[in-house]
Image 1: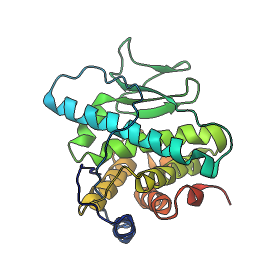
Image 2: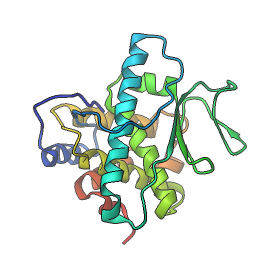
Image 3: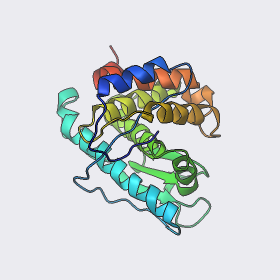
Image 4: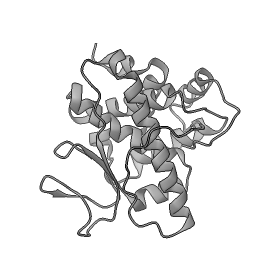
Length: 232
């Protein structure tokens, strides 16, 4: 998925239509994001210019996703919105890597930890995904943020929980007032969802759903918003 800052926006409805048309193939969309409030993000070691590029996108993605939920929370849920903590980048098998309860952070993973109410990601996962398009970073962060939302109000489990997080990610990215979609973005996003379904060892289809299911769930949220992701 690729999200670029631009003054020329593509209508969201058109971008969603393209993604829906590509659900059984591979497609995605592009956006522009001005920065607003800042959520502290630990970006770990940033050696190269490439690392600086994707970590900057991660900071933007965190702010865009947090802004969306802060702005729209009371349209869908009662009570005050609370941002999860963003631990950010970790290097697995190091003393600095976060633990979720007694479980160490695993390599090539991104996760939401209910016990600590935080989100974290392996730098290599983000670096490799970003090399295919910056939309990857937004998708991963929006998905894990969806799990934080689930813990606060929903509590679904297993595959249904993972697909609902994809749906909430679609609702977030397509619903954000800070993002603008451009031609080519739908291709990137579908490729990212397909890769996360088919290629990542931590997202096997038994617990996260297959590529078609993930694309369909994401598109449902993009088309119908948060309400389309909630139990009837």
